[in-house]
Image (tube, rainbow, N blue to C red):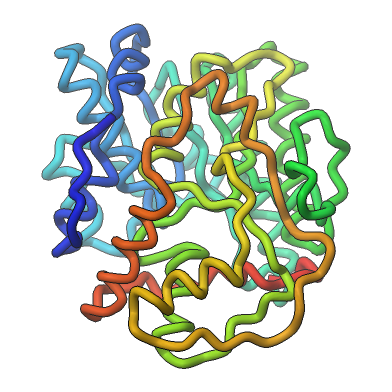
Length: 346
């Protein structure tokens, strides 16, 4: 595993270096792959460090494999940072089919674009982002291997304490966001079955780092003296660096029809217990509202862990890092996860 500091993470630059450090498994995966890798939707929360991780792995094995990050890149600094670290960038509106057709060729594609927040207020845009857009992408890269991000929300709520939804479970999406994400999966499956495109669908639940994620949300509520709603009382969490590594390596398992893999932490975590852990570290008292419902949005990550290896970042270390970051006023992405939403309206 990459070297991980035991003490606080002191800066955004240090955090981004840590999140993008490739695991030995990622390095080996890049060693045995060929051709360029395109990361679509690379300007989001997870895309920049995933693209950097892939580029660092390619450089580590000395192969002429270019990582190409594609996004609208409304954040100029983000684009410049990627270029500085050896990632080629292409500005593109992925809803423009002609622009998608002009994207560079690639042997492998990691598809990360999509819409969640504001989905309930703009259902037309949600369905365009989550279904129309992947249709154009899959047609453009029909001859490539595709790892397409999805979400554990497609499963719906399941009883707590049962291990979470597995890949064999029938999807039961609730709300426009989850339904459109299942639509994205069906579009990928259609192209895969029609054209023989090898694909893997990655149902993520939930990636965390210091600036964003369910753990950071809980920590900030505790630090601010706000009550933590425990009605959605249980969750999965995985360090974003571990999730990125698993996504890159999952390309090895792309198939036609697509394979489905849950990318999730191994354990079912209690929201109440997490809040109390942050309260101890922050010197605050945890306040709560609601009471634990018997079901929650939970996924079993066992199959992916068996194939790709267990996440290397322990929960206590994530909690320590996030508590230190929040205490010191560290930056936030300003995008709360709304993990406590139970009706699918994001």
